[in-house]
Each structure stands twice: as C-alpha cells, then as structure tokens.
Length: 469
Image (tube, rainbow, N blue to C red; front, side):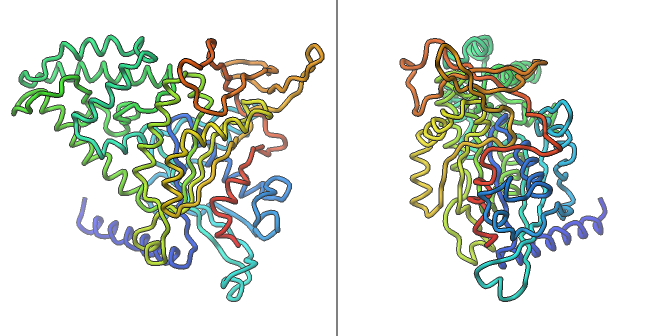
C-alpha cells in the first residue's frame, strides 16, 4: 500500500470524525447500539425499522411515535455510508426476504455492517424552530454477529479466569450430553508438555465443534471465542485456536502448551476484541437490548440463568451515564437503554406482559445501577416483524387465546396454543416437568408490501423521540 493511499485514507477518516463531531454538537447525530446475542433478531429489527420509517411512516402504523403521529416527519431515507472501509447493511436483500410471497427471515449476520438514516422533520419546540422550518437528524446503526458481542467480557479476564468461566458453563448438566467428550479430552491433555501444534489444533477443532453444536442445539449465549463460530478472515489462524484448560495451578513455563494457549488468548484480546470494541462500542448515545426469552425458556432453567449472567457481563462493557455537551463530543455515554423481549407474538396476547415482568426481574439489579448513573431505562415486549396473529378458539365452552402462523420448517399454517410464560425467574425445582415448548414461526406474509409490528413505534419514541421534538 502506497504512502499516498494510506495518507488519503487517514485523512478521509479524520474528515468523517470531524463531521460527526459537528453533528453531535448540534444534536444532529444519534448512534444507536442495537445489542443482542445470536438469534435475538437484530438484523430483522434493523430491516423493519428502515422499512417503517421510509415507506410506512403514517399515524395508523406508528401511532405512538410522536413525530409521525403529529405529522411532523417529512421524509426519511438511507444516506450513503461515509465509512468506506465498512460494508453497508444490505437492507434491500434483507427486506426482500421479509416481503417475499413466501417470507423468510434474513440470513444471520456474519460481518460488521452499518447504515445511516436521515430523518427530516418539522420541530415544534426548542431553539430549532426559530432557525429553520425543517431539520435533519442522522441515525447511525451497526449490525454485527451476536457471537462477537459475547467476546467483549473476555477483555476483563486472563486465560485462567476465562478457562474457569467457560468450564463452569460446559460442566452444567444441561449441556453435559454435548460437552462430556471434550471435557474428557481436556482432562487427559498435558498442558506442561512442550508445544505440539498438531495436538493443539486437534483439541481446538474439537472445542470449535462443541461450540457449533451448542449453538445449533441450545440457546446458551456464552460461546467464546465468537470468532470460532464466525471467523471471517481469521479462519484457520492460530489466534483463534485456543480452548479452556481445567488445571489452573500450572506454572507458565516457557515453551509449554499452557503458555502457548495463554499467549493466543491474550493475542486474541489485543488484536481482535480490543479493535472491535474501540471502533464500534465506545461512542454510542442510545441502546436497544434485544433478548430472546422464548428461546431461553425453551432451553430450560440453566440457559435462562446463563442468559441473565451473559447480559450483565456484556452490558458492563458499555459506557452508560449522563453526557454534557463536551462529553457528547469527545466521550459520549449511553443515556437511554431499552430492554426488549423480542418475538413476543409467539406468546398468547394475554400473556405477553409476563415476558416483560420476567425480563425486568432478570435485569432489575442492573437496571437499578443504570438509573443510579442517570440513565433512563425501560423494559417492554416487542415483535419487530410479526410472525403470528392472535386467534381465539372456543373449546368445551372455554375461550382459548392461541396464535396462528407457519412454524419454521413446516409448510402449513397452524393454530397453536402456546404455553404460559412465567412472570418471574423459576428455580429448577419449580420448573414445569414438561418444560416450555414455544414454537418459532416464519414472518407473516406482508399485506400489500406492508410489514406489521408490535410496539416498534414505542421503541422509536423511547429511544429517539426526544431528539425529534
């Protein structure tokens, strides 16, 4: 790469940062963190958000989004990305999946993507209305693999701490049917021996296979390192070829396999996680945290508790608090957080509030900490894209609240009576013997090209409504 090209690229980045700084100073740029583990629905939500704001922004569709209800939103459009080194979120392909005659969910994200929406509106209050008839706010969103998000807490661990943490998860009885073969291999592994690359690669492959199995068969979130699942351009690189060790009283002697694994772990933190964290997770203004409670309940009590722990660890990596004008320019903090149990329409309409209460209990301690730091917090259930319709069925004189939709991997629509979700965290002893068996559905067909949602307008109002007054 020539010096001239490098200099030009650096200059472009500085110009982009300067422009964003100016927009921040005028409160014209909002960086929204859409946070969630794999399967929480980030890609579908971003797609739906763009679709509703660009082509479905009317008071019937978004009645609780003030700027739309008051007819003050003039228009909204996608604007070209200024960060030319980051792929643009492929909105049109994702929307095509949801709007197809036989709709399907967009593919899972396997790389960093970003997009910016420009919202032009008329102000009704504040200093803005005295300077111009209309104003523009730029909303920046980033989509990324949920697997990579779970890597962030590793920055606060050394190799020994990480090994303990991972083995605690793998050793739980809920996952032992998948992890026992690998745990047996690890018990026999000689970490004090001289480095044997073939032995390290073999165990690394076994560990990677286990992570992929757990991702496929369970909803456990803490699958680290995330790049083992979605390696991107690191496929086959030694930096992602490490695994936890059960013996933590070892002395890191030069040339041992233990030292080699510890070095790879530290290199992964420094060269992979830190740049990802600093580039994409240190300058947010608002945060939406999507949680797949339905999947966790289906999996069992161990996964629900593990989801709670993973959320707390991950949320601790973000900067929250009130930001003054200068802080917003140079050290912005997240001052609003919305926790949302996504895909709520898979639950009977009369039971959706239970999900809200369950999510609140899972996060009440962290919510309290955020509020103490001056952060505005809310909790709700949403479905960014509806996959079911509410349907009442009469059965032996009783009215049953059911859902109607097409289950994944099925060809026919069905009417289904979903189980009742708990409104609090159940202990293992109080967990139903039969467990919970919620179904996952394809998106509902879009009528005349229009997507349906549940509380996406509430979501927008909470997160950015105050910026559009």
